[in-house]
Length: 362
Length: 226
Image 1 (spheres, chains in turn orange, brown):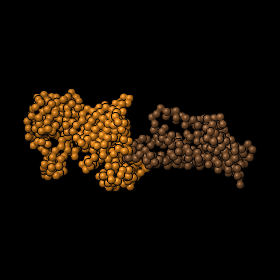
Image 2 (image 1 turned 90 degrees about the horizontal axis):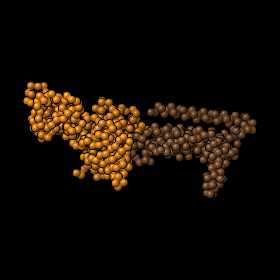
Image 3 (image 1 turned 180 degrees about the vertical axis):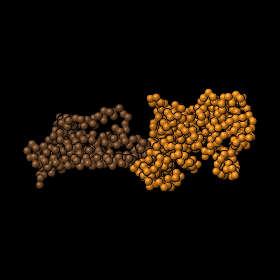
Image 4 (image 1 turned 45 degrees about the vertical axis):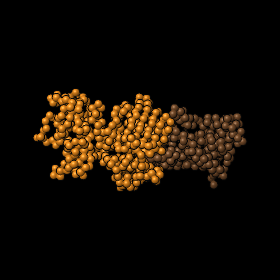
């Protein structure tokens, strides 16, 4: 693999230690996911050089930023990165435009790959350029912060819970912009978050951190469905599925998605999309029910045939999580232990699953 | 004319001393304040305490030690003599050194407070936007700490103007060299020239009031910024 990010960090101070060694894809969005105190932010700060790990090796595609073995430490201002902090941290003494130009002016003209007008348009802040930062809403400020980081044409974008300080309405306002970023710019992103929803919506790859160690690292679809990780045990456990648009029913406003490597399809309520486009949906484990027969007479739209792979205990005594497979696409179902025994589920068995609701992510 | 030429000479000398001291203090106080605001070193406490010492020590104590140090047998005095500069006691240069030490906390502390209030975040942001540390200081720290610099300059200047004990100990009372306004007032009183003492003392009261007025009005406008 040529395009990739290698990070090896060892760091400890009183009561906390970070010890990780991961290879991440050199493109797309990688989520660093974990509870607070798991070391996500510290990891991001070490990659940026804002914090110095005792032992470190940081390589972003073809550039080495830090290698403690050869005593190499590229100072933060010489690393081609964009960092988005939890609070936008705009410079209060500068206008929005001057904030955007701050980084832009400090890179060589021939390195500029993002123009101010384009970044402002991408984040919907063109009408705010002449304002002072303290006259912006939290969401607007964060969008300016993101545009400001983009304008340095970074080779890596580091985002430290950029939505955590915002209320849910503001979050909903920014997420589409982040998705556009993901779709339009070819910059790898490391995205720190403790929200499974954000991760499911944005990430292609996920690194699960706990107490400074990596529990898992892998593509989002597989990793969210792994039964051996704490991800799958909670009430909001679920999986992300990428489907290809294959039909649109204008009368009922339903979009049909084809599951990868399978003839099976799911239908979701959505605005029309071009055939062949991929759409990402999240299916919560608690929204899937299982039955031995196809249930034709039901209001439930999506009924699919799947193979039982295995099960694990949920976070309470009454439930179990069942992992299912449809031609390589993993799904999780959260059902009661009682139902499991009634259905007498066995690995390898073929069963029908009903999906009560599907959330379209992007 | 209520003020004599000697009075004017004293005012001019005071102005020169206070201006020079303020400029020197802003230059050397800024790195000290930056260090105190951002360091995690164990020396932070002791250095902070040393800088603050002139706040609590009687000026005569500072003056006494400076007199010994800068005198012909002191370390500083021997050094300046070896360099062919003679001794600094009873000279304008000596007064400047004394004033710098004496007014140090009045400059360093407002700067330190300003830098602490800015916090590390804007510096980190600037670094991630490719600003090197010097660039960051001039384009981010300096503008954000501007109210702190104004306060520091005003306090440093005013406090130097009000200096008496240190001057008397190390500078004595040499016209146009070390006789500042406060010493001139003392001389007038000693000579029972109360009218002239009145004029100078009154001028000092007005000056001090105006300085504090400027300071407090600028503080008010500061709080409306944030």
